[in-house]
Amino acid sequence: MATRHVLNVLGDRLRTLPILVLYLTDGCNSRCLTCDIWRSPRRNMRADLVDKLVADAAVLRSRWVVLSGGEAMQHPNWSGIAQRFRGIGARVILLTNGLLVRRQLQSVIEATDELVVSLDGGTPETYSAIRGVDAFDLVLSGIESASSAGKPVITRTTLQKANFREMPQTIHAALRAGAGRISFLTVDVSNPVAFGPRFVADAALPVLGSPGVSAGSAAAPDSAPTDSALTLEECDELSVVLDQVERDFADAFATGRLAESPAKLRQMVSYFRAIQGAEPFPPVRCNAPHISAVVEVDGRVRPCYFLPTMGRVHHSAEGVTLPQALNSAAALDLRRSYHAGERPECGACVCPLHKGARSLLQL
Image 1 (cartoon, helix red, strand yellow):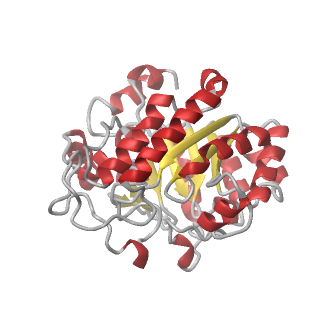
Image 2 (image 1 turned 135 degrees about the vertical axis):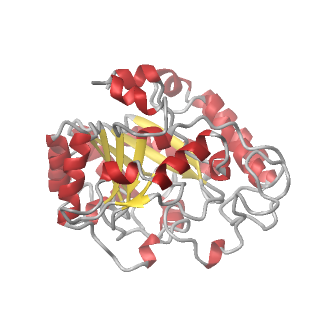
């Protein structure tokens, strides 16, 4: 049956869905600078929509289900939902800001297979400035508790102007808390649809696909990027920080506790330089639209975090199913266009996903 996963990448019609990401709620108890979802009224995914998605995921042989949001743990029945997906054989990954992990530790232990915890700073002061809440020690305590209970924990740091100098401190903090893996990605400042609506601070963002802004282009953007992006001078500083990280954490790279290789981490410098128009964006290898989908709290479906809506699952029994949404005319057109290199958003993607035929055969 694993051969059906491989058939996905040989054409534009999806027969399976290895990775399903669910926005269980758009409520959030963080107040992040780079995401405005917390400003909106909270909505939770309906129970009947969950019912439909569990059934559809079983038909589509989903192997990883990522619970996200907002903050997934703010959904009143998140752990019950997680258990239902585990019941169909999926591995459940909880993507969380970590604020509720310690308080809901037993649910985390019983209902999840893995945690990905945001850790956007190496000191309490920086974490608070970025996340809008004073919770650095609380988050580290949650990581330690989950790790001590045997749950694999990955920390994910979104690197930006406010925290790039603290990469070494962030790694030290994560290691001390017992994180099994430590991951970094650059802040997204070019995509208008990812991670909540963009508000006043980002009103002047360059949007890829607009006149004068193209993927891989070295031309300066028409508008100044958000304050979260590094300047060219700060890119030089980041290169020095990465030298220190590579030198001081050689063992963590060798054992895989640092998830990205030194070479991949250095692509972050290229990304920020590209945002400033100084060089092309780093090459992106991604087949996410052929192996994954994101379902938002109201049933809207997109192929990944960064590409637009391509359909909507309806919660009613007779409504549109996930397999139907994944293979709608709009979805097929979107897959064709990204595969042909016609989606400018893809050229500046900060977290591409790629799985080859060999890995898909192992599912």
